[in-house]
Length: 156
Image (cartoon, rainbow, N blue to C red; front, side, top):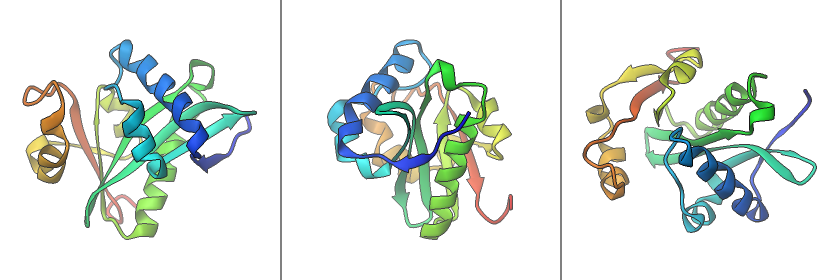
């Protein structure tokens, strides 16, 4: 399976929105509004098959030492081929290039991120995330996602 990971373009936003919210409707991730995706389009990476987005992920900077992998979605036909892992690797590479030492995620599939080298962590260890964004979530303060973190340099 051949593909390349690229930075998202503005015309990818509606497809990213549809894909993320498809998985959110199935309880696999939290939904994202279209306006949030447009506002953060520079955070996103995508894989396209022709003009169709078949995978997406975002690396969102939270603070000078912390970024988040979010909105990782891979269409069913591209799953089980290492695509998700490669999307996470691309985020870790960008974080390393930006000089960000810690990358975390909040997820309903912690085993996937553990396979990528992330370690479980208490959400209270991520205060910039909790107070910068989580308080707006309808699940706050009863978040049912698992928190994991990757320390760049430590795992490499």
